[in-house]
Every structure is written in C-alpha cells, then in structure tokens.
Amino acid sequence: MKYLLAILLVYINSIAFVWGENSDSLIAVQCYKTADSLYNSGFYVESQTAYKKAQDKFLALVNETDKEVYWIKYIKSFANIGYNLNILNKQKEAIGIINKGLKIGTIRLGKDHNIIGNLHNSMGSVYTGKGNYNLAIKSHFQSLKIKLNSVGPEHKSVGSSYGNIAINYYYLGDYKKSVEYNLQAKEIFEKKLGAEHPNVASINNNLGEVYRSLNQNEDALQCYEISMKIWKKMLGNEHPYLAFSYNNLGVVYFNLKEHDKALEHYNKALEVLGKTYPEDHTDLGACYVNIGRVYLAKSETKLAKVNHDKALTIYKNAFGFYHPRVAEVYLNLAMIQYELKDYKNGIQYFQKGFNSSIKYFNSTGLFINPTISSSTEINSTIILLDLIIGKAQTYYKMSL
Image (cartoon, rainbow, N blue to C red; front, top):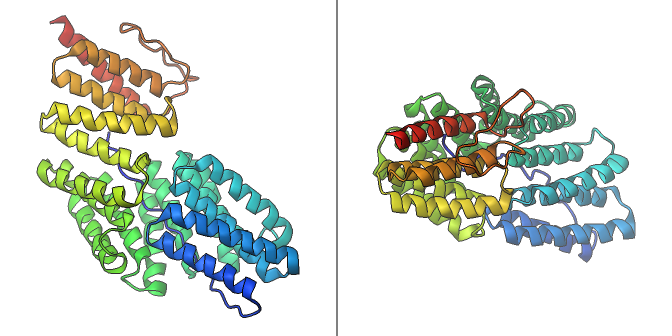
C-alpha cells in the first residue's frame, strides 16, 4: 500500500474586484488581494489571517450599506477561508465555516447563485480531506450543476468542478471515470487559461496519478514532468505544488525499483514542504512514510523506523488512533521488525494495526485476532488484508 501526498485540489479564485466607492471598500479589496497572493504563493497560514481580515472588512461594509456587491464578497470569503482551513488540516473547523456561508448565502443570494457553487466546491474539497469521497462527489456535483447554469459549460470554474470530481473517483478506485473528468477539466483549462497555467499543471499531475495506479509508468512520468515544468516556470522552485511533483515522481521511481532516485525526489518534496507547511502537517507525514519505505526496501531498517516513527506521531495527532494512515504506518513498522527477525515486536505492531483499522477492536493480546463480519467497521480493507497476511507470515516464522 502506497501513501502519497494529496492529489492537488483544483480551486479558482475567479471573481475580479472593480471598486472605487470609498476607502473602506478599497481596504477590504486589498486585504483580499493580499490573501489571494499569499495563498497562491503557498503561505497558507498567513493567507488565512488575511482572508479573515478581508471578511471582517466586508462584514462591516454589509452592516453599513447592505449593498449586494458587498454581500457577494462577504459570502464568498467563507469559501476561501474554509478551503484554506482544509489545506491546514482543520477540516472540522472548515465544515463549520462553509456551512455558515451556505446558510447566509442561500438566504441572501438564493441556492443557485454562483457563489453558492463556490461554497459547495470548498465543502467537497473538505470531504476529500476527511476521506469521505462519496460525500465529496455529491458536493462537487452540486457545485457543477450551479456553475453550468450560472456561468456556462466552458467556464474555468466548471473545469475546477470536473477536476475535483476526478480526484474523488481516483480515490474510490474508479480510474476510468477519473480519466474522463480529468480530460474534461484539462480541455477547459487549456482553452481558457492557456497550456502553461498552474491549473493545467494540476490536471497533468492528477492524470499522472491515475496512470501510475494503472501501472502505466511512462505515461505517469510524462504527466508529472509536464506539471513540474509548468509549476517551476509559473510558481518558482519553492512552492508546495513542486513537492507534489517530486513526491509523485518518487513513487514512480520506487515502483520501478530505482530506489536512489525515489529517495532523492522524496527528500526534495520534504525540503520544499518544510519551508511553508507547519511541522505537524500530514503531508510531511506522507513524506516520512515514503522515505521510510525506500529505506526499508534498501534494508536500512534503522532509518526506515526513524522516518515511520515521525509519521506516526504526526498522523496520530492529526487523525487519532482509528485511521487508515495510522494503520499503514503500524503495518510498515511491523514489516521493519520482520526484516530484523524481531517477530514478537512485529506481532505487536500488527496488533496495533488491527486496532487502527477495525473500529471497537481494542485487544492488545498477541494471539487474539479480530472476528470480521458484514457489520464490522473497517476503514481500509486493503490495509487490513495486508495486516492479516503479514501477521500470519510472522506467526509462521516464529514457529520455525
């Protein structure tokens, strides 16, 4: 089982500002532009502060004038703030913010307004961050329906909806649909934004993910290299998006058993993310997992364990104990002990992996195995199967 950095969520801040009424409106607009600039540069913590300041300014203007144009900017700010919170792994807070925006926006603008589509798009991205892919698809289709009616089938925000729908079909393993929606998004972005726009890079990155999952490694490499070339040109060498390309290229090289190249790219991803993300961000955890997997493949077990321990700390703090990412780290730690022929400690890690995979299974007994039925709540069947097989193999080694 591989763990990647999140596939890029395509989002567009597409509404231009045309003002000139008073100094308060100009200050609000400037705050918003500053927030967008910080966001586009990958400074998500700083952009969050600026978005909130802009929102407060627009709220004051709404209360003072009750003008529709200020209401639109104020309500749109909930989509920006919620989306930004999602990037910062604050999904619970993001859902509350977006729901507040939907409530206010539906009353003031109506349920079919373009800004309501933005809010549904942000909500879908939050659900993706939480791993609720079917709910994410539902939200993105709500956004798509509104966008098609309000701005037309070739608008760039429609491409954004297609790209986000594709992401969730990818996570659900429906690669055919993922390719279909990615290609629709790519066609719109290339036509409306040009072949070297960052959103075109995002779609190439996403297509690369699908092709890699289909074991079409050469096609995947080509897509990743296109996305990296665009991002370097448009965003510079230290933007977080570059980390996605480095990471994903590392995955392909790992699959091709070119471990040194894989390690080089994973370390570049970690370096880039470390400059802009907080040290407990889950994408840094994903980097540590991938680096640890390379060291395990190279039989450098000490370094493999160090990196997995770092990932485990990040994931448990972010997700709690019952989560597939936590379970996968325990699986990998068990395999490190297996490599060391320390089978008893390996069994302990397998058991912790069961606890993280199966809801309400809390046994720590080394010889107690879970009973699986149709009502058992499992967060990742694939990881659980790997845990079962790995524990059985370890038992066998212990018996020799």
